[in-house]
Image 1 (tube, protein in one colour):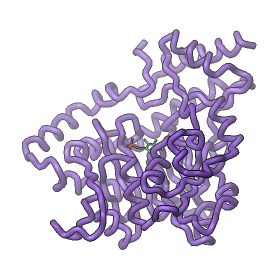
Image 2 (image 1 turned 90 degrees about the vertical axis):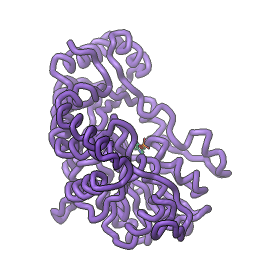
Image 3 (image 1 turned 30 degrees about the vertical axis):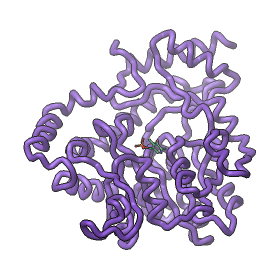
Image 4 (image 1 turned 120 degrees about the horizontal axis):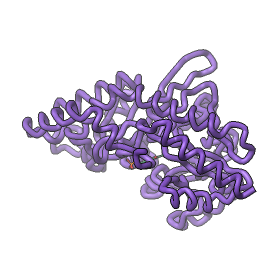
Length: 378
Ligand SMILES: *Cc1c(COP(=O)(O)O)cnc(C)c1O
């Protein structure tokens, strides 16, 4: 059996090696390492795939979120409503800009921000909602967009884990997650569903004026070379990463299908086990399974994590400490939240290996060990 990994980027690379190697060599021969046709070409292709009018490539997903908040003109003291059950990057950038993250609950089933909790948390200082399509399942965007319209708020989608998810509105309209809010952000971190061979990120918008701001801020606030109109930053996707990503983009739908197939296999293996709750899939979106995350009932989750490790099966806890309990937010005086669902999930979730290269032999081995441990505990 092939060695088990959370993500097998090597096997995935080997399948497209010839094409990728040639594209990287072509960039080296052109010596156009920053900007240029390769980066622009990839941005165009990504915009077409993603149904977004503007794609602004940048250095990573964290920068994408930061640039989004800057472009919307959010100021120190403003509030953004976000889930606490997320990766730290979503909320760290707000704190960096001294914008206050207001943490709310997630839906216990989807792991994504609860629209009812969002509406309750709105104050006169609220400027934006930042839903996260956690693990690849879409947040309830229809409800979130309605709340945003009603209260005149911006929506910034953290689509780092959700790229490629098709979200269907009740009127039948289908949109990609990340193209629904005012701005969408994504990451090309190697383990992401569309992963580079290094860091990378992108910002999406359909708003022409916002696109100008986003581009300007990502490039030292310059409106034309050496004319700096606003305070910006330096955040670029380099040409080698763009060349690789452009090839992988053509395979993205196939990669998503492989992840969904692996998820189906796990679902079947764990069916009818009362202690194992498999990932929920709402019918209005196409879960892209960035992670395959179980909720364990009446089980010593950390002991399972250890047991699996002893059998060379990696598993991860995404994330062991929710954002509202992270020390970094002590900089905000009233950083006190009661988020029982978030705390409950934090203690019970476990993510199993999930990637495009899993085979049935590997998945059978993983599932057998999970079930074996759980039965032994009973
Ligand atoms: C990966 C990730 C980010 C940050 O992306 P980087 O490219 O690592 O900066 C932000 N939000 C979520 C939900 C992520 O998973």
